[in-house]
Image (cartoon, rainbow, N blue to C red):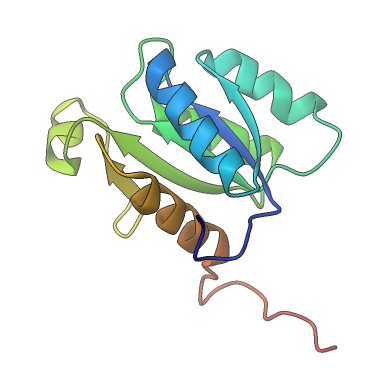
Length: 140
């Protein structure tokens, strides 16, 4: 099954495609992650305010009818400043830009369709990424 260690983090998955939401949730749970899922960005914002534990990563579709993923990420980071973000879309980054949605260079991004291995590897990399501007971990 998994070649990487099981995940322990909580991931918020937002996608307007219910089948993709189910695929992503099942795959991430199989690797040990706790997954909160919704097709509604407003519900994701509510969870960010009300969830009792930490939310470590947002995995979001970029182009959605109620709110684009980039806007959702910005609103979620206002509530959860340390939240990491990974985007996915059926469109390439240049096609996403054609929708007027700019993505940050180097932003974790998956083009649909993707494999479970591609998803879990990208999620792990997004969770483990430490910016050169972030504080170093405390010494034990």
